[in-house]
Image 1 (cartoon, rainbow, N blue to C red):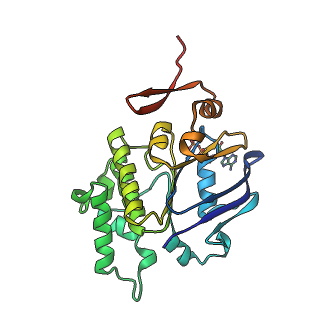
Image 2 (tube, rainbow, N blue to C red; image 1 turned 90 degrees about the horizontal axis):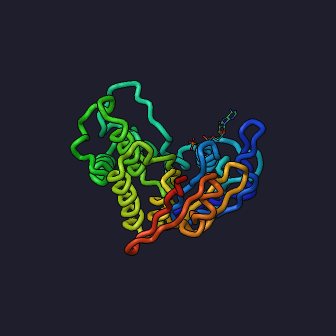
Length: 261
Ligand SMILES: Nc1ncnc2c1ncn2[C@@H]1O[C@H](COP(=O)(O)OP(=O)(O)OP(=O)(O)O)[C@@H](O)[C@H]1O
């Protein structure tokens, strides 16, 4: 089961501002894409359009050759998972129940969860080091713990296309790396049939873990390609309006700001 997302001539606007002028790109199975760019560049807007939640000013987005607007909601939910930037919990619920909610597209018959759904939820919690949290009230979690639960829920949906809006924003470095490892492992175990698209402000994590990057410059331009080519010191400096330099040390690379003296 894989998914091929195709964007053709996509134009995105916010009021009178053009966020993306014209984007044509395929997001293929086995690829992990990072959407990067300065605040307000349009990362969340783009993810909304890729998910089929918001309408573009022009162009189209198709999944497996079918325009997103033509998908039945239930079928689309089995094909793409979306992790929004934040989760708002209004009621008490256990972490396990929250994760299990994302099995909804797979339920059949009377809509009761099966043993397989329960197993998938526990496996997703295990994958993100959250097994001990299964019975905890979701309202008692810290921001970072809640974010990892949201990622576990999205993985539990087991859709071929995952769209993750800043999945690492509340996490410390250790958990950021653990989550990217977990995503990588999830993709590999499924024979690189899955496509992951996530937005992220940490260019070094993106360079290390993403196969591809889409860099929005906030002025309508979007650079797409292999992560290390797109997130170069030159391109990133221009997009973020701050001089960056690439340093190399013992086989590691990092983009660092050139702080003024
Ligand atoms: N209804 C609206 N009217 C005017 N501008 C809007 C509206 N909705 C969104 N915008 C603007 O669109 C731009 C893109 O927003 P978006 O949330 O996609 O940016 P982002 O790249 O995800 O930013 P961040 O890194 O801060 O999360 C922002 O400048 C935002 O203020």
